[in-house]
Length: 480
Image: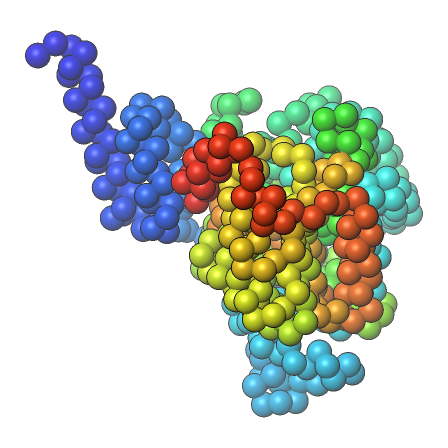
């Protein structure tokens, strides 16, 4: 038998073995399994390489462990709140929010997400305002600064931020900076050395064994968290780079949503940061009361909810579905990508068909083409169900926001796609406050001035080439 025939036979046999492993051993979602089998079938050798990069599951062994977590009384507080909900003694000042006890309970039971009701929140939709506020808070820090970002560029904004952190470290403030090694692959080693030389600790999440060759495309840490002096927290969609200030021509104006939080919820952001830091660093953060210095600041209810490939449940997705299914009047959604699984897609369709005013806003400018076309394929189904779809035209829409009935909302890092729900490490703030929800609605309605409405008739008239792109992207959407 010729050597080339041997090679072809070996590749085909290997593909069959790998396909069987995907189906019977890894127990992936059925849609993801079929998507990988298609890739392996039509791209035998390249498909295997793609699988090594994108397809491998994370180890079932828990990667986040913190022995001192029990000292915080997290489990005790969770069990106490669960008992209050179960026996009917959990009552809020705003009686209308008592209707969402099942949502509180969902996050408490499956995510240890303690409900706090003494928070205040500032909303940022513009990168310049967000980073001006952050740099001001950093400048006023006296004890510690904890930062965690997915993407850190090496440009003017990152230089301003690292200069500020180096200066505070030299003043004796504890500075810890955690970045995702793949998302921040352009983060200058010079800037990292500058911070370390000043006394800051800087760590990368899931770094490669070989420098500059990171094949761990999946399981990235997509969280963006800042905690300052245990009293101020930030969470949302902005990364660190000039593009997030609207200074990169490709994207134009960058529209995102980020929150500045004061109140007890900051303690829960701190716990999330410490767990992530201790996974990435050899210099563990030990429990210290000064890291948990949050004081009551307002009357906004909040839960900090995280999810990731190490989680038993897709907690943030479940929270989204629960919110959507609770809607009586409206659901407003902003997301850069809309690639839901069947459960979330059905929830949105059911809301539409039940007469709920469902409005979804997506960007006009794609940053990932396959993801963009997959989004359009699902948007077509929602248009048919009665949703109103807005295409944001001012620049790039990167916000991850849901508001329901002017009562509850969610803002954070999780997109509406499989990658955010099951492959990446994410964190969202689930918010329970009428005034804050209405403020987010106001921001949505302002964005409508910069958006065009996509009707079902317009969607049906799209060119054949776009239909073809959608069809291909839809097939592989479970692994995007």
